[in-house]
Image 1 (cartoon, rainbow, N blue to C red):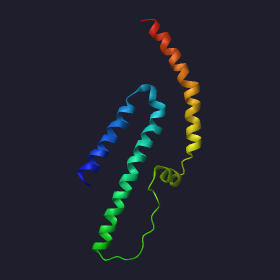
Image 2: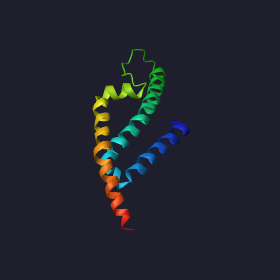
Image 3: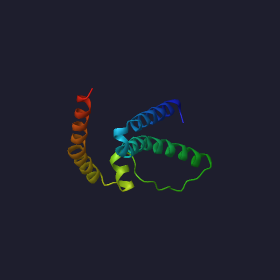
Image 4: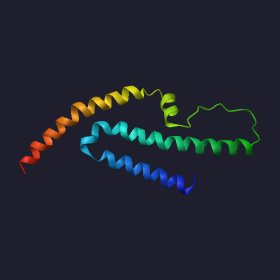
Amino acid sequence: MDNKAIESSNHNNRRAKSLLSFPWLYRESFLIAFLFVLGSSIQKAQEARIYLSRILAKYDVHQPIEMSDLTTKEKAQEYLGLAMDDIRAEKERFLKATVPKWLEEAKKREAKY
């Protein structure tokens, strides 16, 4: 891998780890981290395809290799079987039901300071 790809990967890992450090995101952190990983995985899959084509050319292999189309995040999500409409709906329910409760609890807690 070239240095740009390594730096990009490290940046994405740091962002995912920083999100995981917030306790109020604990339950949702898996999904958030997963989406960060998915985003960087598309780039890594494309790099792997390039390396594979170089290796196959080096050993004079000319038979076609079938690979899934993972050129966009949406195609990768579909390939993995993620029901993004359901995930978005769950996020909306979370934002409407849980977040207001947390904000109310925070106001009560902060009023004591």
